[in-house]
Amino acid sequence: MTADKTYEEYRSLAESRLARFREQPLLHFIDGRPTPSANGATFENHSPTDGSSLGVVASGDAIDVVRAARAPPDAVGAGSGRNGKGPHRLQNDRADGNLGR
Image (cartoon, rainbow, N blue to C red; front, side, top):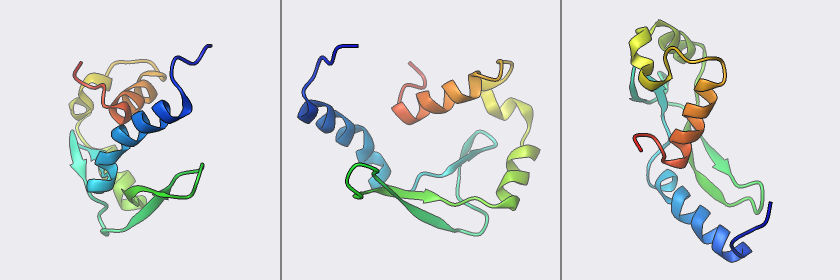
């Protein structure tokens, strides 16, 4: 695989895509919508490259897992009816901002 951008170009692209995570916490996706942790807990996510903050993330616990497990099956939307690789692809697309394209 050949790089088509310089390190700085890739870094700038990453920064622009990650900016939204610094603006507001990344929440759980439960019952078809972004949902904070039941207990309100969060943690700060740090870049493995330089330790800088990537943003705040909702910190789930058993209650959040139960809420997600009890969500109606149709709340998954585009991920329902897929094989085991589908949810991972859906999560990656969501993180990359590609859902709905």
